[in-house]
Length: 185
Image 1 (cartoon, rainbow, N blue to C red):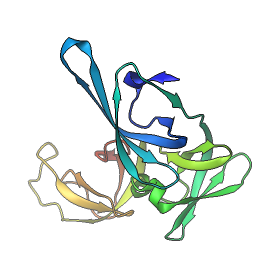
Image 2 (cartoon, one colour; image 1 turned 90 degrees about the horizontal axis):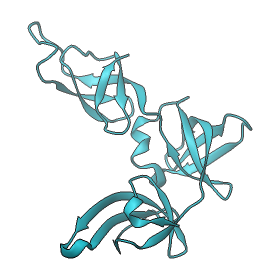
Image 3 (spheres, helix red, strand yellow; image 1 turned 60 degrees about the horizontal axis):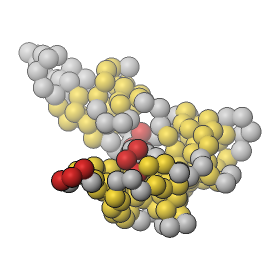
């Protein structure tokens, strides 16, 4: 059991007999020290997000999850398939369970499968990935490195802002936590 004050984004908890991923946590403190912890929890079996308010001092059960190294293989539109790097077993995860992560997945991307009771319930991405720019405006002479940026579409469909010197066909490193450009790769 963990205190609700220790909840953070990305944790897995058991609540009402089901497993939820913490999507968002806000802590509000009222007069006389009592606090209210507002959370958004995503049900891993249904994909629905619900808002739950806890009083400070309440406890919730942390879900027991394990992580396994895996490689992203392909998707068929409805399922994303991953291969365990040790056992070479393949696992399919429905697209609705990895809505945010799929913008960073290209073939052969190394990820951590999040497992519960021997079944995959999600993935954890590396902190950065290398993606190719497929659409952006051309750079013009006089554009500087330090001044602003331009929109770009990457090979997975992700839209980010890149510096003016980045061209179509170049590979860029993107932070998977924030979705921001880091550097040219």
